[in-house]
Length: 232
Image (cartoon, rainbow, N blue to C red):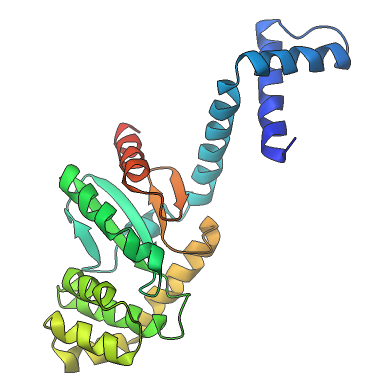
């Protein structure tokens, strides 16, 4: 039995105590829990979901405002939306590229959705350079077109980054100055620190309400997380 299952079983046991079902010695008690879980297996899923939500809420405590406050301009969807989805991303990440249609579909389905994009350049030696230019594009109000051009290139190297910046219509001299600024460097370091605190070790990773999600999980799961965040 895995640790999570043991924890869930313990939670069920405690619940049975409260209902008066728990009786006898440990052997009988263990048999009661086993039989209850076999008859009601959905309880394990519910207990694990509750445990994960509690852990995520604890991890987000103290950093939520920092996580949900974007670098100026690094936002997709409705910048004034009531619901926030945070994506940690890297331009060298194939799974992030694969998630682009899911993000577009989310924006179309949820007009009140604000997607805060946090650059987490951890994959390629050139990922930090791409992330800095993305934030420079955000500073000029051209984050989305740079992001689209960068992912469309399929490459993360100085030539591809420069081409994406020009395709997005950036003022290149201004962009290079911003990309090299301490403000941008501090943003990237903050993203790395927050990702570590949240337990994210790869991209894409997502925050929706009290849910922490790792990987390219697809539109349905992300849309459900957004709906849960709205309900919460």
